[in-house]
Structure formats: structure tokens, C-alpha cells
Image 1 (cartoon, helix red, strand yellow):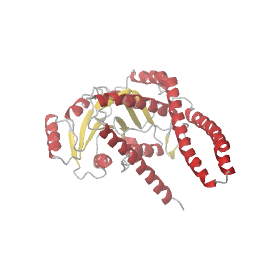
Image 2: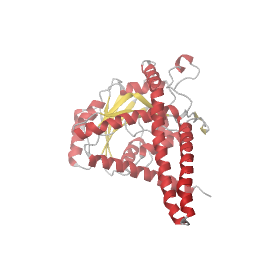
Image 3: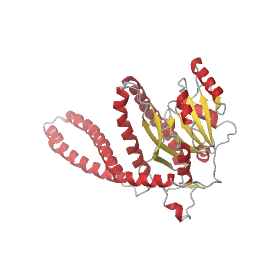
Image 4: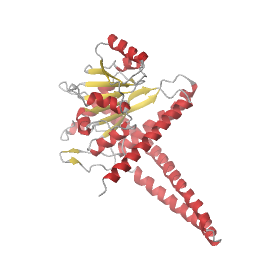
Length: 366
């Protein structure tokens, strides 16, 4: 959307700098590991070999693999925190400069809020999300519910809010990805951008208005917005939500800035990625342009549909950015059991992703 020849608008680009944190991480990690390996070899492995007990060498070597991973993750988190402290003010300043701008009066795209639900409808959450300052916003409920209680709640909500569209997919194939594709990949839809909402999602009233400014003044296909866990009803939620509220912007501001820009070209993917990281969209509180989605074709059928969608968009040459000054709000897990269920879902989704990547790589070998 941004005209590169417009010098007045160039200064409103999201803050971008030369990627540095991945090379720094690797250099520090390699230095520490070389020192560690030297000390391990001289103080542990050599004495064992001198005693002619080669089988006992296996345990130190096995242990070194975990130590290497521990050092890599630890150094990464430290460097990311330092990098965030260095750039956060400039990132905030750049985003606020964009949000202070006005979009042209003749640029008035249509936006749909896609509320995905499966036996977990929360009426007050959707009602709050619909209170957008941007007038061309359409609410759409994508319902996979099978429980009659939730089906009736949704029917009653649509009766009370006749401007909200309702699309049902009772088969519930492929979970959330299938729910979204059932709507987005069938029929003619009158939208230019869409926002994905989870059942407990709360959006600030200017969410759509702010996101559209980010799209207008920057060359992006997906915009992931900041999230806080602010709907906390007990001491467990209040205690543990703070860690996520800190982790989320720190990680994603750095990844977004360090990720570099990818340029959409006629021939396909341009090698414009100069960073070593990618800003991965969360799967809710995210706005996607119609052009980007139609280029991807569909949400990949996977538990981690958000991660897979991000990768598909990146491979197609689309930019993904994180907006630290645009907020969504969701509930933190109510207890340890709920937190473990969510964490296990993340883990299983990542294992499924890695398994599928390995299968695809194997199938492409000659």
C-alpha cells in the first residue's frame, strides 16, 4: 500500500534496523561452548580414557547435548531482553507516528471479524469486539458447536444482533483451520481484511481502525497485535499471567524488527529477508489481508494452524509484523490443570509441525 516514492510517508515505516541478535547469540554461544568443550575434554573425557573405560565417555557426551541446548536458550533469552530494551522506545515511537496519521477518505476497505467457536461461546466478548470505531466492520460467527446449550446461545445472540452473520460447520473437520476454511474458501465474500477472534477475545474499540493504518502505511500481509491476559478472576491467573504479559511483547517486538522485510514480487519470493527471525502470528487478534490469504490458498490443516499459516505466507513473500501498541485481551488459564492442557497442546502442535515438515522433505527427495 505504501508508495516508495512518497518521501513524506517513508518516515512512518515501522522501525527497522540491521538484524544483529542472531549473529550475536551464535557468536557468544560458540565461544562458551568451545570453552566448555575444552574443559570437559581435558577434565572429564581424558581421565576416563586414561583409565581405559571408553563406555563411560558416553554419559558426558550425552550430557553435553543438553548443556549446549541450555546455553543456547539461555543466551537467546538474555540477548532478546537486552535488544528489546535498546529498541522498544523507538518501536513505540514509530508505531504511534503511524497511528497518529489519517488514511485517505477514499480508502475505506471492508473488514470482517471472524469469531471462531466450538462449544465455548462467550456473548459479552463478541459484543465488546463489535463495538469498533471503524464503521465498515462486519461480525461473523463461525460456529462448530455440537452442544445444544451453545447453539441456542449463538442463535439468541444473532437474533439480538441482526447485523452479525452466522455460518455453521457442524462436522467440525480439522478444528479451527477447518472452521475458517469452511467460510473463507467457499463462496464470494465481500471483505478486504479479516480479523481472527477466539471465543474469549476482547478487542479495544479502535482495534480495526489502528490495524488498517498499519496496513496502509506499511507493506505487510499479516499484522499480529499485542496481547495481554487481563481477564483474571482468581489468584492463580493474576500471579502467572504477568509472566506471559511480559514475555509476549518482548519476544515479538524483537522478532518483528529483526525479521527483515520480504518483498512480494511477480516472480515469487524475493530474497529480501535480511533477519534471522520471523514474527509468528498467534492465531487470534491478528488481521490478514484478502490478497495475502488468497495467495496462501487456505489455512493449513494442523493444530498449529497459526504457525503454519505464517510460514506459508513467508514462503509466498508476504511480510508479517507485530504491533505492540494495538491490544487484544484474553483470559489466562484458570488453574494449573488448564495451563498444562494449553501447554501440552502447544507441544503436540509443534511436534506435529516438525513431523509434517520431515515428511514433506522426505517426499521431495529424488
